[in-house]
Structures are given as C-alpha cells and as structure tokens.
Length: 396
Ligand code: V47
Ligand code: SF4
Image (cartoon, rainbow, N blue to C red; front, side, top):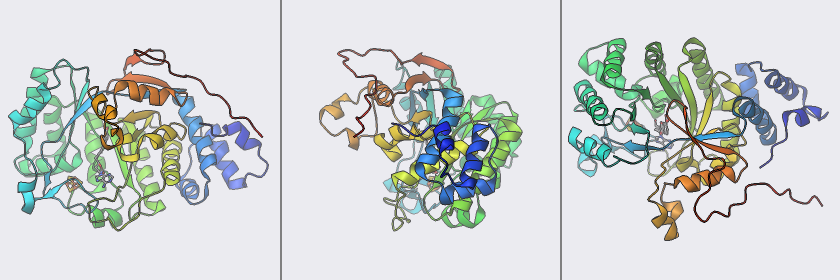
C-alpha cells in the first residue's frame, strides 16, 4: 500500500497554495487550525491526506502497529436512553427481549477467561437503575480480587454521569471511588458528536458533550488514562467533526490523559437512522487521516476493525492508524474453516498479525497502557510460508 511521501507531494508544482501551506505545517510539526481542518474535510484529496497522515504516523511510530488481547463484558443491553443511532440497546418497555446480568453472572464471564492470555476486560453496556455506584464498585473490587493484573477498562461518562447523579455525589467524588475500587482506565465511548445541535437530536437526554469532557478531565487529574471516540457519518456536518476534534485537542493540551482516538463509522442497520446512507471507504480513510493530522497531541489513532471490515482496517494503516482493535479469539479457526469468517467478528492472533504484516507493518501486542507485551514482527507460526515483502507492480 503506497501513499505519496510528503516530500514527493511538496515537489508537485501543481499543488494548490492552501494545500501546500497545510502540508508544510505538518512537515514542520506545526499545528493546523480549525479553519484548515475544515478546508481539509471540504477539499483535500485522499492521496494528499494519506501523505500527511502517514508522515505523522511514521514520525510517531514508524511501522509499529499495535493490538491488544481483551474481552468485552456487557452487563446489559437494555437502556433507559433512546439514542437514534443505537442498534444495540433494547428499550426499557421491551426489556424482556434483552439481558440484565447480575454481579455473579459477570464474574462468571470473567472467570471463563482464567488462564487465557488476555490483558484487559472492556466493560460497557446500557444504562439501568440497578447498575449503580455500589454495583460497579463491588464489581471492580471483585474482578481485581480474582485477577489483580487484569486491566479494568470500564464505563463511559454516559454511565458515570447517570450513576453519580443518582447517588447525589460529585463527578470528583465518584471518579475517586471508581479508582479506589479498581477501575484502571476509561474507554472512549459515548462521545458521539459534542455539538449540542447534533447531540440533542441523536443522543438526547444522556450526558452532554461538556459533561463527557469534564468527566474525562477529572479522571485525568487523578493521574489516569482514557480514550476518545467520534461517531461520524450520520447527520453531522464537517464543521461538527472539526469542533469535536478541536475540543478533544484542547482538553488533551490541558491534561495529556488521552491515549487513543477512535473514529467510529456510523452503521445504519437496525436503528432509527437506517434511512441514512453510510459513508464510503474513501470518506472513512479521509476521516482517519484528518483525525491523525488534527490531533497532534494524541499518541495513537485506532481503527475498530469489526465496524469497518478487515480490508479497510488494513488500508487505514496507511492513513494515520497505528492501532487495531477488535476481538481476538484464538478459538475462531472453526468458523474460518467453515468458510464463514466474515460473519464472525473475531480474528485469531495469527490472522491479525498476518493482516498487519501483509501491508508491510510491524505487529506489536501491547497492554492497555501501550507497554509492549510481544513483538510479532518475526514470530513464525506453525506451517508458516507467509510472504513478508512487497513486489512492486510493473509500470507499463
Ligand atoms: O459509544 C453505537 C458507538 C460506541 C453505533 O475505548 C455506533 O478502546 C457505529 O466506544 N454505528 C461504543 N457506532 C464503542 C466504543 C469503543 C469501541 C472499541 C474500543 C473502544 C476503546 C471504545 O459505539 C458508542 C457509540 O458511539 N455506536 N451505535 C452504530 N450504529
Ligand atoms: Fe445505546 Fe448507549 Fe445510547 Fe443507551 S446510551 S441507547 S446503549 S448508545
């Protein structure tokens, strides 16, 4: 996969002056403004954005491409809120169609991973009254008592805002209680689009953009780390994406607590926004690239491959992405053997490693805080006859 290098791009005398100016800024490690961010969304071609984003990515990480082994627990798929983009939750009126796990149910799921090489549990689900401060603090304590080294990445400001309000405690007090109970980091969900004119239409009633940012800020002030997402490609306009990126960059300047930015492509099946078309792959790659260029103070940009598919995930590695997320399940061979791997959103470690290597990058297994667990660049798998290099296509 080849995007032109930034130097090659700048040699092109036909490059429009405003695109040249933005490219030079990126080359010199200068920050682009919100106006330039909007200009990139409105006008910049894919190849140009790839050159800029790949430059930033390779300055920060070279070919290193991270992944981690985690598992997800969803305490419930019933939710009080009714976000119009959400295909996942069951309305409270239809709660009998969903599940509501008890503390013991969740601990049983955690125990199923005993002895497996996972480093993280990602806990997130719907919002319901029984999942409150005592429930979650007890859950985190019990997980840590059972498996102390397992990193607990759990809940978003959507849940925290709700449970702290219900407990009549401040965000500061609430996040301190979570830290004491064993919460290690916060995932990036619930951010959607911060601008109220969009957020009120698609995610009305849940925490505001301002509250989402404030809870992350408080968590960072406790010395802890978190991620940030942006749900794009629904009813928002480019200016709302730039505003979202700008607010994340400003908070990161203040705290430095964000690890990863994860753009989430809106998928339109089984939700109230099914009438909206989905974004194209070109638009997805442009969006990754602009995220990488704009968020100069974020170390990582992550692609969530189950949402975009494996091929786009591979392409994203040339458009600013340095981290791939999605279930790694080394029991999935049976599905691929049955010829239905695309229907099952899990890859084996071997598949993921090969997916990364086949586009010329170096796969690195990391823990949640980006400590290296294992460098898979030269690891051989049984029966391995994998081709590791590129052959350039003949130019005719
Ligand atoms: O907050 C919901 C989004 C998020 C749809 O931090 C949708 O490591 C697309 O945040 N189409 C949850 N997106 C997922 C999430 C996440 C995933 C992986 C890693 C991390 C991390 C965080 O999914 C929600 C919402 O923004 N979402 N519905 C949909 N129809
Ligand atoms: Fe779905 Fe989360 Fe909204 Fe609930 S708060 S409806 S789970 S996106």
